[in-house]
Length: 181
Image 1 (cartoon, rainbow, N blue to C red):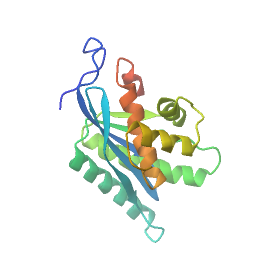
Image 2: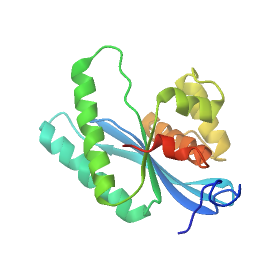
Image 3: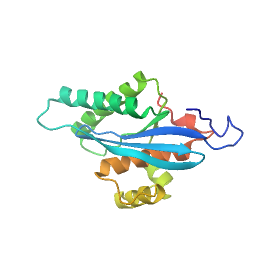
Image 4: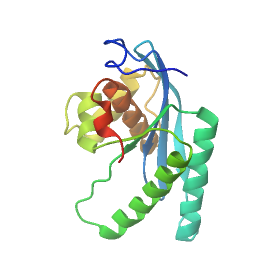
């Protein structure tokens, strides 16, 4: 699939691209896949990769890693966008989610796809116009913008579509500033 940024194409919109959005988690990792074609966005798929508390932590990480690889193989995304981690308090949870995010990034990197990351505030601002939007506002806008019949479930799948929407909206001359370095 060919694509070009607005800068490279003299201001033209991206012509065709598949974007995989990932909402990282170690119990549930959300994913959303968008097709961007001639400035229009269409949801191809969304869902979650789940792990269980009965699994050891390494088993959970392995499931997230192999699940991410399977998504990349199935959808062959041109870009992969991640939500950046943001925690106020619980360090134990933050470390586990960071490890889960790390294996998803590793799978994506090994697949040779360009990786991008966005803060929760950037995603909310891009999708709703309000960087402090609540979960319900985000989900409603994802449904509206992608012309879905209902809000995707579970929440992690809707959140991942929001990440993919944010990236699709960011495609243009400044998108390289969001590359994971």
